[in-house]
Length: 305
Image (tube, rainbow, N blue to C red; front, side, top):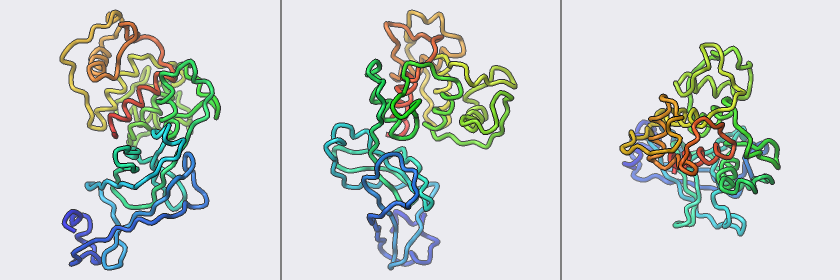
């Protein structure tokens, strides 16, 4: 009881009770749900004291949940495609970013600050155009299974295509779970565009700027150095700021790096997020969809796991 006194201290049902019972019951999802992939396990987590249900929801306290889980033959080959989702009463599913399979304990584990209905899903994307970018396949499929990235169709990801400023901003905001109250500032961001909210949030938080005060140029391809700068700014927003690089990494094309991006690239290189290619960092090249997936996958693991 002491561990949760700050959560249940004002609840009459918990007052004076020496113990708490945690109920974990298998349940079914609402008929209408938007879960990504096939639900493998559904659980309803609930605290009770003296037979009375207690609401557990806290901004300051989290608990770790571990659910015994036996992998299927297909899941054994791709355990990274297992995910945990919070599912509300309307069937709306929200990714629990800390959720993953732990092979050491043969269980699904995740952290949460509220007890509700959760589902474990397995989702193997059906992209058929990843052979030329096998180095990015796992990252692409893992993020697609989480609903963070999407293909251009159910069967195609188009990994070698350049990614736009709008699309990268949207992916970055969703990967980091960034939130802010912001209004549309740029005249070239259409009202209701799928990236409108993400661009506004990123701009409000100082992660990305416009080309000028009124224009964002959403459909322009983003350069690698701009991607790196945005990433370091986003990390700071989730209290994961990178330490300043102690040793300057020498890229043979370092002279091409714009002054505003040098510190970000050095810090990311020191942490192993930027490795370069044949000694080059290619700061002015456009970022491809495959490169974006690999970078965001590394960041997702750094933040949540």
